[in-house]
Image 1: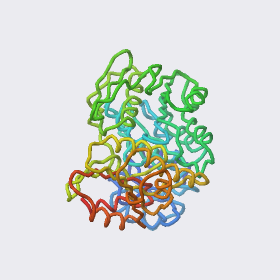
Image 2: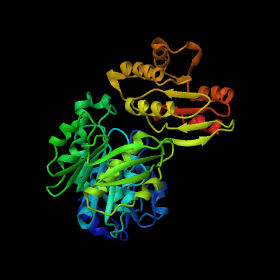
Image 3: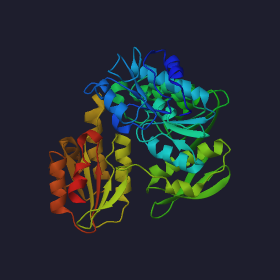
Image 4: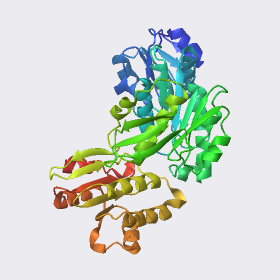
Length: 440
């Protein structure tokens, strides 16, 4: 953060100062992440209240804290709402920066796209999951002021949330990866999901750029929400950035953008990642920036997103269990089916936040397993998947039901062999990453 005086920060947030803190150069909401010079925001949560850690954060190098009440001898700026105050400080910091913000949202792939755009443009990016009404202003407050481009992922759980993130970050570019079923429990329908994601487009300035998924069922709707110039990506030749072909090993893609053909090495194999790369290239080309195509292949995807590991049995483990939705499950099964292996094993947990669509989507997943011609299915804590696969025609001896991640790990330990490829995927709440500690 460009250095801010204690008094400036208090004024920007509309808070009352108790004590005098040193100049501020960053922000934190977790005492474990505090860096020297940070302002610590004490945020009350459902299970933990940040006010309990104010003094710990101060001893760790924070110059003071933003709180709902004075805390001991720690310099504090007292406000009515610490989350809202963080947003105000983030927006104030954004107005001080000469930077182009690229907002990225979508039902799947937004983190991978963020990483690829940042790699292609040599841009700054938000760390980890700093993509909410808390994470976005923290990201802005951690910028030094020397950055020219920030790629900011934007998450949402309901209507109005992306609009609020845009109010804080003021993106000039908005990229939407796709519209899927994630968060349908909260929003009620895909139409509502599309409308919530479109808030990013509606917030763009007249001289901005929108990047849209050409193949998506909601493409026309998204285009109707754009107030500025737009480009698209997809498999259609009509897309400005389109995937022409995948290599035999699906590890690279031929993508045509801006009238030029690029051979792009992918950070992970498959069509989904090729589409993510096409989105990143559409952003770079739409901005008229020089593109470091090779850097896309060097983009670092977070753990548990198509992370390829080797088990102690000599089997290949594909850990894709950071999260799961009907669309990402279908894509993962397609990639598994195209993998060379002695046996293709799908270890699948449930998908959360589907609300009234949960039964239908889990049964469809079982049918998708059968259609994908997988050798073995291990259904973790969700019998609907297994039952639907068998009902669709999968032999029952090829289907195993286990209660939880621990049971799945035992099954894998007893049954994996060299030459097998096992996909491990499910919603984060299922905890399937625990299987990796046992089989790797």
